[in-house]
Length: 103
Image (tube, rainbow, N blue to C red):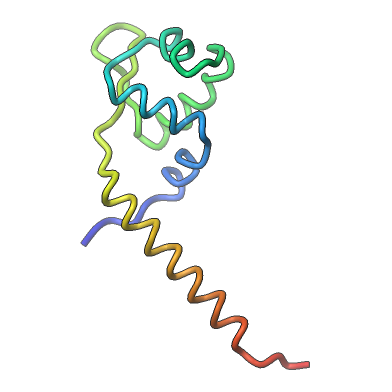
């Protein structure tokens, strides 16, 4: 059975810039200035996003000083978990709508 996705990982994946950073880092290790340039942002702009991705253990320190690299991510497992979460949320919302109100 697949482990559920942690809230920390879900939050980390919820920003388009973070997703772009992961895609770029999957191609190879980069320093923060290189990563910022590749995603079209400043170093100051990506710093909190790097920290969020590190907290979620989606990016790690690289082999080179100051380097960053993407953690190997089981995207298929994450995709399955997100679909299950969406289905459960939709089912719960449907059940809430079908219950008679007390008023």
